[in-house]
Amino acid sequence: MTEGLRERTRRAVRAELAEVAMGLFARKGFDETTVEEIAGAAGMTKRSFFRYFPTKEDVVFDGVDLTGEKVVADIAARPVGEDAWESLHRVLRAWQGEIHASERILATLRLIEATPALVGRLHHRRTEWRRRVSEALQNRPGADIDAYTADLLTNAATAVLDAVSGEWVRSGGKADRAALLDRGFGQIDVNPHVRQV
Image (tube, rainbow, N blue to C red; front, side, top):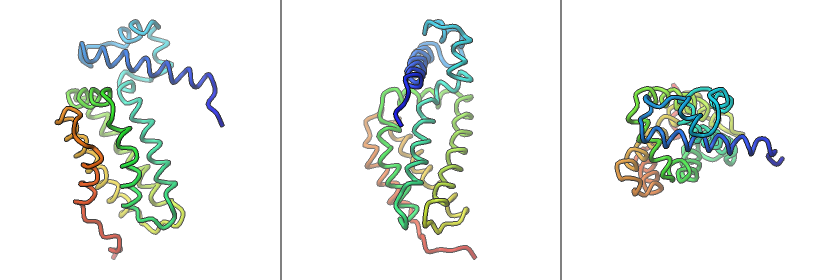
């Protein structure tokens, strides 16, 4: 089904608001920027702002949420019988460019690292994302993986993503993310044959 005009317009307005907000956050700082300032700079009222984002923090994480949903859907759609670790590797490798590729994402990650309230929000969102990925691994057709193993693999994959992200930010966005992801998945030794006792 094709996306309706209303939804495309809504996404465009959200993207514009996020861009305006990130510019203000970069100039003034996250805590010092008000919702009123963001709305005014975007040519709308504070009330209109809240039609698009429940909180100021949600502006920062807007693109992250969309990618997270797509990653979960792609894991659920991996081939029957594919090893769970391999599924995680393939999906995250396919999405790593979108997850970390833009200057905006680099600016967002730097902003999050410098803002304690955003670090807490990121932790909460990652916890929810890990839960959903773990469920997707368990619920794939033909999957033979218990909840503990799915959680363990998901957390190991998240650790790889965190390491890739940290190195990418340290390099000023110049590090080869795909190579770092492959290296990380290769460095973690996963034995799928170990079963519960």
